[in-house]
Image (cartoon, rainbow, N blue to C red; front, side, top):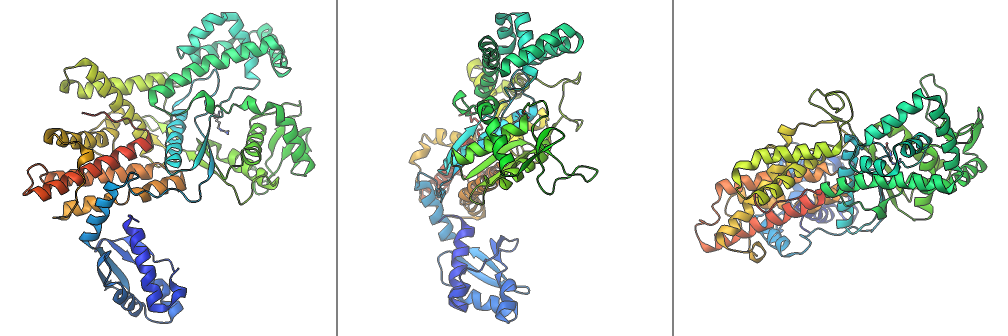
Length: 576
Ligand code: ARG
């Protein structure tokens, strides 16, 4: 066990049992980082009542049992009964050396291993992916990477919107422009133009509107020619998403598609089941569920509409079918919906109804990992200057172009420069997204995300490049730096202590589906490395054993940063 906090918790549990008997071994040791030592335990204050003794007494007795371990060098009582814990240098150094030797960086695997659906990205066919989709894509992909790293069985679900009445007008428009021309336009990402032209005709020309309505009927009836055209439209847009996924280094493939249309055949049965078990009722001709606790502005119960009065199904019906399928057929233990926070009520209602139906039980954890808004520097929803939604490809290209601007003077070789600019630009864009608490809105600001200092992608990439350059200069492969690590001063101690927290950070991300926790960890690690690098000469170390130790500490930092950046999906150039 590497994590200092865990090691201290275990130590404290032993002391609790020794001092007060085995019943106390499980008491939460309440260990927190401290300003006065490495950590502090507040357990004495919480147990004083139960033991009917003054907290300071309890603390003193506990401290007397902590003295002679290898983990803690000192345990001192302070204030009303805090126990200040300082780890021993030898323990930290030994753990760091062990972490470096371990292929898994001492990160324990998940236990139990779960089957998890991560529902993310989910753009809509023939509609531009907007920056909101960029965010769910990038955050979802990191959650997936982390869960898989810990050994969970992950099912990626790209629940694309490929069905609905808008396809009537889209298909008619496809016929009007011609299949080949439509393909060219969609694959090039001129999706908004395509959609808007279709809509303009539908809105202004009654004959087109009538054709569109007939086309919807044909689509719902499964008319073969209509299905062929629809499939073409889906495929054409897919090309465009896939190109974006590839540029971004997102792990989604066509095998992960979980389109809305997949559920069409079971929507009737979902409605029937919900009606039969009394969860859904007919209200004004529509089939609705009214999960308890959801009311409108006027206090009346809020419906989740399952079948409209005209017999049509909607977004909610599909999500009910999807949750039933995932639990019943895929046998998942957990479902993470990485979707915009504006859909919070939708998901709260879907989960409530699934619980009422008995599909969602306490054995399955279903959560909406809500994603906040991306804003422009004016703090309003991110838009183009003319108010349209921004094409994602343009956004990515702009990040890369600006990155090239930042680094251009450093590289003469144009190929190398392009490669590095791509990694830096895309890394900056993704990291800006991942480093913010996913529920908060954040401001998309190219200058800030591309800065080489501060909590940015380029800063972290640069830290890895700097470590690699140390090894290049020494003509040593980082893999052959094995230590042992030992600590000669505070900067080394702080860095080593940080590195030991890697596993905990990764587990926290998996638990809360919050990649920004890993980003913060990596930033703190890189900052600790910067201080170490400034204060502790590596290649000019006073003697060979210090040099070997510092090389090993640098190699461990490199491995942790690379592993962490990979879990965030941030590309890392070899040089910068
Ligand atoms: N396609 C939807 C949108 O663009 C997101 C779908 C999210 N997933 C889900 N199971 N509803 O808003």
